Image (cartoon, rainbow, N blue to C red; front, side, top):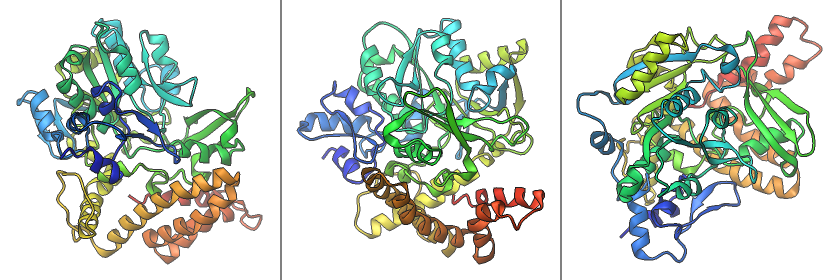
Length: 476
């Protein structure tokens, strides 16, 4: 039996769109009430479901990341079980401050695809950018101006189905940019539709903590004074000179207004990535952090020595000799700054992510199997005893917190009441923080924002410490 229906019933669809392209749209990607993109097999034939199951990154009928990597990369590449195969591991940053300021991190993703365009390796880039009909969506850019106009992170539910379908058969070559499951889905897709193999010639991966629904942007915007039905534009990562690279702000713009409203992320409820609000269910089944099937993968260099640089720096893992050649040429010309990293350092930059994707996955798989639920076949073995009791509790609370956030926000949005969402979610987040940090530090973290604003706390240094305390609970 094709397993695509199991994927959908089990909440494991990431909405990548590979199944839609592979079936020529007979399995469409739809928008759910909760702001997620999801395939719909209603009315699909068994033949189409079989095709979909072969390209879905979470289906049991498709090969896993190890099998895909062994097929597309030479055996001469080194291998690390945390980051996958690799040619070279580096930290890098575009040398131009003006360029980096308008990028999410070190600017290396747009720089790489820009070089591929400039040197004729590709004719276009399939990537997420601003969308006329929605905040963000996949688009196709054919010049550097279009690439630069659509930089920065988009923590938003998207699908590459329409973009890839539009370019199929046009005779041009493309680089496709995406998170790990999207890249793996695209790899499956070119095997299923060989004509696309001549078109999708470079796969550029993004390190992923987890995917968000549309509600994430709406919640943050609501807190800076822009209601969901008035939201026109967002910027998830506004950089601030002389601050830590992680200490960025969120900004939103209301329809019909030119001015932006913003707040530091640390002051926004739901912005803490470790609390997993609005996380897709598929992300609870993912064990690929460094886009192991991509030709190059880029993420944030959350490491000492780089984190303090407010401009941002990327971790870069190359698996393609051509992309490593481009990076080397950029370093030689002075266009980019490059520092060597070890696989251990790359993995350390995503330490919390590994706890979620490996230790957490082992517990979640064991829990689901014990309750008789379908689970995808993963490289992590189910094992509820892999971690101690406290960590197990955090893993389970995090999953419950994430699931509740979807229904609570949908109800709050329909009622037009942000407070309704806060009433449901604040006690759950506070309970999570208390479990994570313990009764003393947990309570300090919970009450820190209020204490920092209190007229009774007059020392500016103490205020600064308190205002940052809430970021201590990563939850990963």
